[in-house]
Length: 261
Image 1 (cartoon, rainbow, N blue to C red):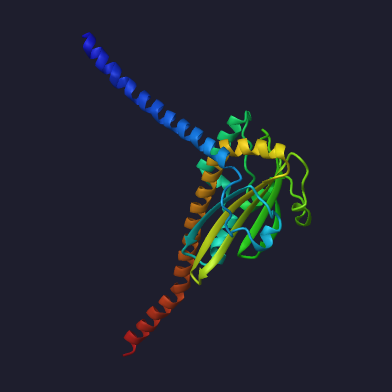
Image 2 (image 1 turned 180 degrees about the vertical axis):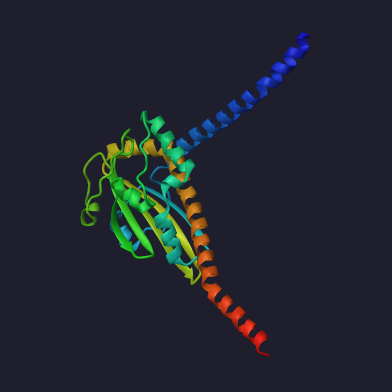
């Protein structure tokens, strides 16, 4: 085979590998830039009015606020039920993100999620319910050290959560809120709020958040999209089921009229 032909084939064979390396390089560069920007801007983000009322008293001063929201074509009660029952096990991408975190922290074997919806799962992992409004809102809280390989969550009682200041820890709130817009539409908000208990914890969490926040925020976005799809599916199903008796009754009346002119 001529040497020129071998060179052409060799160049073609190396092209996919080059594209893979290019994509990987762009990904790593973007991750580094994100981490640097997040580290520099830590604690300086604008505060919204999302954490207020009952929830605000549990974390009156926080350093991280991440809020995801979407308009859902379903009543608030249906949206909240879909959010509460969503399982982390349902998404291969979410499981993959958690496993990537474990590998980066040097965890040898993956720890499976508990069964049930996300609220049940979080409570099984050690989170506590700080407040709840039926069919509308739930506030979950935990105290932890997320930079450890094996993360352990503790849930101080609601009356003691705000006053918890043991050095070296992070306090986290996760809120799920389905607010009605009208009788058939709602707004779903999933919020994450973080406060550290001392300067050492702040420094360690600041580094952790800079590196791992892309995956954490991606999980929130995936969850929001999954809840939107499930809530709207449930509402369409309930609406079609509710109209079936009327439709059957109309068919029956039409049949009687045809039979007895």
